[in-house]
Image 1 (cartoon, protein in one colour):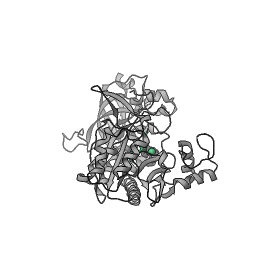
Image 2 (image 1 turned 90 degrees about the vertical axis):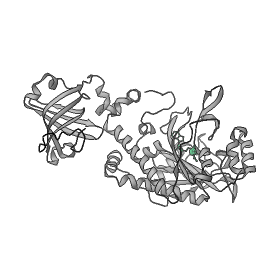
Image 3 (image 1 turned 180 degrees about the vertical axis):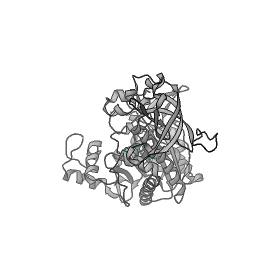
Length: 443
Ligand code: 4AD
Ligand code: MG
């Protein structure tokens, strides 16, 4: 560990500033009489300087990137223009190798990562994670998760964290993307969303949220689809559709404010995405029907190469063009019943459409999907029938409408998509520790 505050610092002789640091060689520059090592541990980078007899040893002459070692020496402050991380340097008087690194794979780890082909990078994700960019995204990810939890605690009324199961026997978002498996002789699935379980928590727990993996058997390889992703979902009781939108806006802005108020995270975001601008509330609201008109006006075609008409899905490409032109967050609302999930509440003013919302962000498109839920028993039974869903396995979900129903709604946010937007990443694959997508389950 580098840094005076770490457990690794040796204070044994009282007054001395002699310290012991451990880490791996991130950068290495050998000259005739001096070796500069940038040591990396999970907490930061530290420049270490070997001079004198130290550089003449066999170990010093055969150092390789990623070798782990301990170094003893004195910490010096150095002027900013010398480009030492945190403007300090360790002047070594002793070092010892802990684990040598083979010279071959190290190239993949950091600097060269940007040029390597996608397959190589993915196969070597465990080494790529040692790079500054990849680890920065994962650090921002941790900060974002902390910020969501903090926000859900602070918001009024607060949301309680629950942990629904991942092994289920019901679908939420359509049968086409279900991962099925054998559960002691019965058919079961990896959950697509925890929403239905969150709804059952409302009566006794109040508003709830969860952070859980969701699974989608997505066969298409796009830059924003994973087979397993981290889903942040919340469910709110006794609300209107407008309350849902206001809450959603508030949560997203609070999370952004929280991460930007933490200087180390703000610095990481700036280095990853220098152009990031925090969104302004209120987000632009646009009804689906108006979006169709907008797409027609801008001559953006549907998946079949035709002008969009009411009832069309707004596919990824069209959605991205739209967000890139508008270039600010959009709440796209009131999607037609036919293209949305069975549980969505119909708009009382126009039963062709639902009280639904997708939040679209520039560069990524949809990062949140949410809606008000059907609260009426009879209507829900009709919705099962319309979608060809057997109501039997959903008895516990249906019961919510039998035992004290309520106007309620919620949403799911894809953490990797949120990060792709925040950190300006090309694909969500860079925002998962070990991405899972069609045909990739390794490492
Ligand atoms: O729009 P979706 O499918 O909505 C639901 O699952 C609702 N039941 C959520 C709810 O209301 N509680 O998914 C929600 C979000 C999407 O907006 C997207 O950000 C993310 O989950 N998402 C994916 N992220 C990565 N890879 C995939 N294959 C994703 N599918 C959805
Ligand atoms: Mg969606």
